[in-house]
Length: 317
Image 1 (cartoon, rainbow, N blue to C red):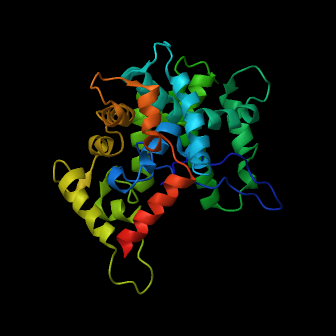
Image 2: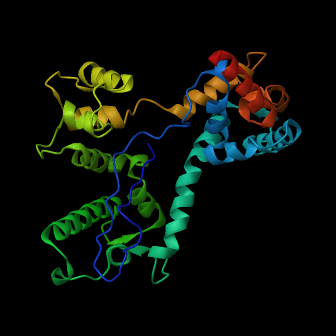
């Protein structure tokens, strides 16, 4: 599920008043890749972890020669101390950097739109007026529309104030990044948990029951009797894993364990994995030569994808 953290980026104004569309805001720990990490069936997970999801798509279109050439240049960038070796620290830093790139690009995309007075900061009033406009109670078409509008406005203001650590009503670039991507910041975790519960908790009791948990992910179509296997599996996860105290509900602490597992560093695990698979002399660091000898694990190309397609087809036969 792709995570979206703004209710809207612009207010649609036409003949009739329109409230910004409420988008799903259930927060999940971002994954390095959408693919399963199973090297026996291909290296797409490793490619997306090492390059970033968008850059991995570019490499998929390259020839093996072009892919190796670009990989060599990337290795030179990763080797920040220029000692000829890629250490775990250097590789871990690179993977973290690639995963944050989409966040930085998202902030770049919206910064100019919201910094109306070009002072290098974004005031709450600038964000509010750009996103929600200047509307009075009389301009709403109905009560439900008005309630939804005010709830969204209140929610964004609450998050903005949490991101605004010095409380001056102005978001620096770092604070605005925390506002857009709260799952990346420890001091925003309470907001992430609160918003997640609000998204899923339909009866307003402040916790999530099994029906709400499943209903957020799956809605049976009319006439559909059998639920998919993954829904059955998620129900089991709810009862056996998510609901730690076995009271039939997910409270705030259990939601935190679900969406923000703080003891897992996927970038660190991937850095260790790549070094383990590539380091032939067991010195816990890898050379450019070792990386290029295993280039298809780090990056893709038309050739490696063709090979993976053949493997997939063979498995399906």
